[in-house]
Length: 477
Image (spheres, rainbow, N blue to C red):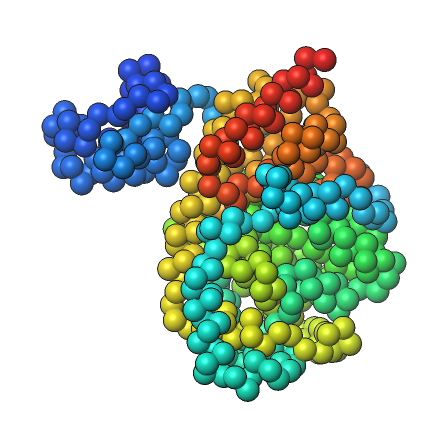
């Protein structure tokens, strides 16, 4: 957008940024008051207020009650995006790592700051609203909460989820929604529906280690597909893999991939669905981060372009509302009967009280208001953590720039081994996730994943500084 066409508040934001860049405002100094800036630039106080709030969202200014706005960080050259070599193209079995146990254990310990597990901060979750909704359903539906809720789940919840898919470009019947006990059960059900042990599944690389564990659990082989840090899975590479291997399914996270944060463009989603339809290959999309977009519009699902029922969409409320409630779902397409049969064999029933509480939250309109606040918080926290990493980590560190979610993929200078950094961080009471866990072939040893799901408190800021010191010390050995 040219300067002439920028909104007035953005022009004011640019003026403040220039003052920081040329040294007129330094880190910790107070920005000009709203009234003073209004008089200097001959704009309204409301315009300056909007500009300052915009800069606060970017982590550049910080508001102190009764004191005004202060410079939170100096503006540096934007850190480079990570880059990585193409993965091996040979299908391989998957073997889980015990280090995952340490990462999950740290998330439950009070004396640890868990930046390794992708868990949202409890203070950002609507605990009071959920408690209120739970009390209401206990009062209104006492007979339902003590009875079984058989697959495919509560009818009203399935109706509300189906309605919400309209925003993602889909028209889904409630009959085509299957409730699960969390997002990972949804993935396991879809894998079971479309594969047999020994089959080959194409996955993006890097990819979430939980998906790798699900593939391992099913006894499948995985062929890794090269990805772009911004646009996700390389479809040319996928097409090559389809020609060369007997691929039975593709598993991807097109919206804000974990760990890279990539967002597959809509045109790529359409091409991906069309490519797989030509070969009659099922596509499993994990959309657990899809509601956590930072832009104006929710990114569409691959399911939007599905004309043959080959796309199975998995998601849950774990990253947005209630990780402990374990309420997820599958949109199984033509594999509805397979999913229902597998679910009946595994669990037969899903928890009724949690489904009823989530239903109440959705029906009341509270969920959407909560999501709006949550997206702003995650965007702010992610940008703040990026800037803290840029300030404290060694020169040459590269940081992802996600447009949604709360995960950062950090590439360290090559001499730093992320496994060794993980061990030293654990000794300092901080957990992180080493990069090789996101690959079948144990690549990405110079990467770490960090969770920006927590507000940037002094404790979190100090933890990032500690990780930076560890990285500097490792580099200077």
